[in-house]
Length: 167
Image (tube, rainbow, N blue to C red; front, side, top):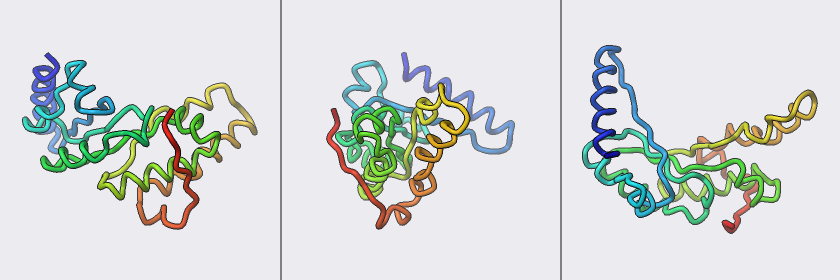
């Protein structure tokens, strides 16, 4: 059912891209492994084979240090599809005991070394919803400080990193 839906989505986006005169990419965020995805009806391998997706966002960011990044990257890259593993902000805050920048730098460095094309951040604004004034400014400064580093493996070199164990 989901693969049939993905075929339909691809048809619609291809038609819209032709009408617009520029590409319209399909990005999907999938569970932490091919097996978990298949168990809920998401056949990622077929989506890749059938050219149904353009960007693969791996995982939900809840167990990023144990994410099967190698498998996602090697499989998706066979089809020219970039992979962006997911960092969940809530996880990063709790597991790193508040050392958000150091934790996400460690993840990004690991993933780039494995061949990831970038990183995907999920729920980055979540810890801010009940903040305002100076408190909001301070928490944004803390959590956004490393964002300009995450897109470039070279920018991570020499920076503090905190490697953690997933809960």
